[in-house]
Image 1 (cartoon, one colour):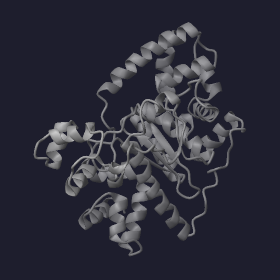
Image 2: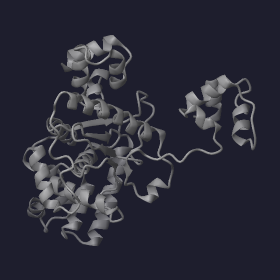
Image 3: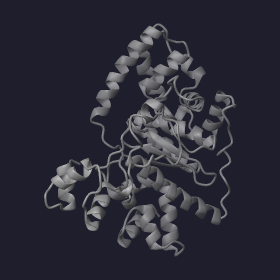
Image 4: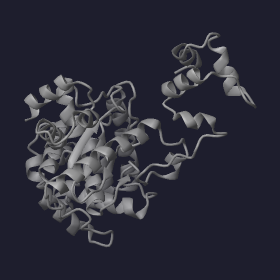
Length: 371
């Protein structure tokens, strides 16, 4: 918000002059405790932080694989930090509940390492999650693929959530240029978060990439620029495995027709594999099916089409609050919270925080839909 907007929201008498004076002051300033509290609340800054001589160096609570060019551009946004922390809290609760109920740890979490053969690991993941190409290619749209993939992971014990804003404020949009998603590894309650502002075909690759991090047993936020050679070795490994899961090499090579143009091949393969043209292009160059010149030309076109497609992209989930609860929190998680709350094992006050509501009536309406 602008200085004038912030000044009006905290009720300064000489709007916006006091804020400008405080911001430029070299020494102590005169400000009342009540105004300072309002300022902290409106800017979502911890009250005590306003007394520091400089802002603290805020670090993400999980491993950050975004390249230096992204990290140096700005500190992690408050929206990103809050989103990670919100889902860490939910994951912690869910993991403890599952262990109390005697659940067995999920066998594939932390079962792999970067020394494993990528193709073998991809085969293991495809089999464990039941996400082979055959069923996927029969789906009619990329959004359907994302939903199908999320359902498969849910059945395997992985909670996948998609959301395009922080907290409950729909105007606090998550920036897909800052991050596409992240993985929270846990032997009992693994979580994958997908930035809902990204487009569905890109979300599909994000989900599978994050799955590799879960197999490695690592909570992480990836670079998001898939297949880039500048990525760290762990990210390149995850990309190789995810590419093999979604676009198996033998299948890919058989479908690529050298007599067709790159554009024609992309059209055919996108319908078969249901992934983005960017993913297909990088797969093709890595399989030595196209030249550097062809790749650069097609990449430029694909990036242009991608920008046009995403320019007016809105969050995919849509629908009512009650439909979105399952998308934003994961249906398995929602059912667990509701079951325990209505069964008297979880307090309503705790359920309110976990489900993002403050009304008992909303809890009961959720139960009608999800139980």
